[in-house]
Length: 140
Image (tube, rainbow, N blue to C red; front, side, top):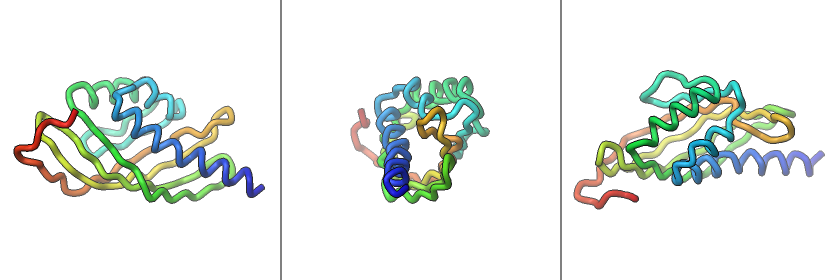
């Protein structure tokens, strides 16, 4: 029904927003909870991360010393029953190795309904042109 489709689209849109929120707060358990048990995550700097245990380890490592403050927007969703695909765009402010950076990019996502809740089945992030903010104070 139309109402079900609208509810599904809103639940799917909420996944990247919650992901960004949890990354800001370094809430690794909450980040991993957004993924299906056998999910994958592809980032530019690491081999594909597969499964919740590896996701937990991967996010722990990625967020240990660096700060990431993502802003997601312009979410496009292709819904097909209990699976969906989507792209959402990203503006990123980060502090990596003590350097303040700005970047933009997008996530290509696959979503799956698990026990009535939408989860990431896969995420692949593509980033463009990190710009260094010289002399700017550390983002915290």
